[in-house]
Length: 373
Image 1 (cartoon, helix red, strand yellow):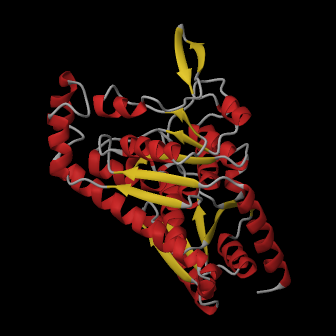
Image 2: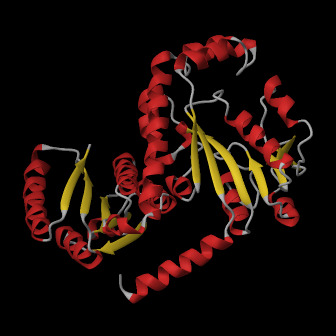
Image 3: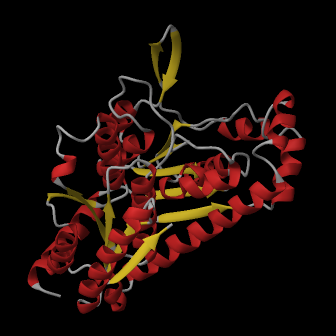
């Protein structure tokens, strides 16, 4: 480790010591008991003399959950009007002013009402942690950004409220609240999750046996991976894990670029590595030539990469192969990820030639190439 790395690590330790501790409860779906478990923990901490407050809790009018709320100290919510309705939001500033030791914040993926200081509740949580307030929160597996497409394939539903993987990576503790699919369906039929008029629709759509089994597997794997990464990060002998670096090469398409970014971010998490996202802008994609829709896709995808913890490189060049290779050499990239192209008869030959050139140069640097489906 060189002197600069040593200084950076020391500064990071100082920053961490000033931050609040961060605990996340994860579940495969609504109704597994995340909120219930948070409230149980809150009562135990309160009994132990800890200054703990409820910043935001959503009981969904479940009797067992509401019974646990009784007697717990709350931070009053903000009341505001939006589109003619009075709504309530967590009052982040009030929590900062009170500065409790620990705060309970439910529904981490929630989108705040327009005009709030932060667009997303997870950003409120980051603000609380930076202020030295510890946070206990909860999220369902389908709200994790990097798993969005996997969840959509399982359920047929695109989840729009999402939490970046980098937020989970910051957690000091990630706990899976696990139930079998049978137990969850039994709870649903007993009216412990939704009101009676919603049960039949839930059983026929999201809460099917197949969906729940696959979502449970995702949740178990996610928490296991987070624990493994925490061990690697905290055991100094495992410094070797920190030297990997990945590169995602994207174009200005919408879905293909987004898929490459998400999959590369997941691989980076698995390898305990950092990652970069490269967009090579040729003369054909100058601002005055590229369609407005593609410009919008590109901006959104680069923002997604930043949310997932990636670094952005946008380079103007008509020699994409050389640009990729030079960046790999400069940044000591171990793995390059590219998307599978949309093939046409003409493009197939050009792609094959470019791919061969890229492979030849990357192999000299002992850099692997992944073509992502």
